[in-house]
Image (cartoon, rainbow, N blue to C red):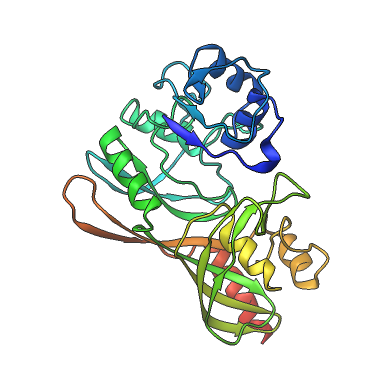
Length: 308
């Protein structure tokens, strides 16, 4: 069972709408989960048009993988480590992690289902088997996938307890001169439900440590160390202090000259998950993984250095 927290702006929403928004599944799939009795409100089954109340607790029990929305696809995937419990993947930029509305194919899950068949945990349900955490479509780099339920539960607990280290490399607009810690709570934007924002309302604490790597004319190469792992955390935090990521059309501005030049050849933000450290769920060994900067990132760095 996965528990979903009810926020103030969720009150009054239909149960199927609430579930599709919060779990990023299609409305039809949310309705099927409800009809099949896989969704409980305060421990009891409800209809799809039940209206969410302030004191409600909503739980979802995803059925095990079967013929489902995620179909195996022969897509190349860069697996940098694998054993009987985990897979560590270097995700390509532009690849969605798991199927959701508008992206039912071409995802990392589709690729892993082809290459590894049923050897993935089923806690994540039929649309995201094995998926413990995600990185954005246009963010490249490392993430860990669970091959069985014990591994999934262990890794999920480590992430929840902030025991998984994740280090990103990014290029931010503007000049950042000093290392800093960004400690601002993040929650769903009240102006745009598809975006996150720094807010005190219905938010969770979020901490990002920023280290300056290199300065350029109009941009800064930074290392971002996550202490927490909120949705879009690095993008929201850097935008909040006036240094959105290069190429970030959601939290930045495409009108900025450097952004316009960059976006002619590059989709999305310049952000790469370069390092990942975790405790192996079976052996208890501390494992550290790293992957080099992708070509798009090194090309941008070269161009910025030439401009200086």
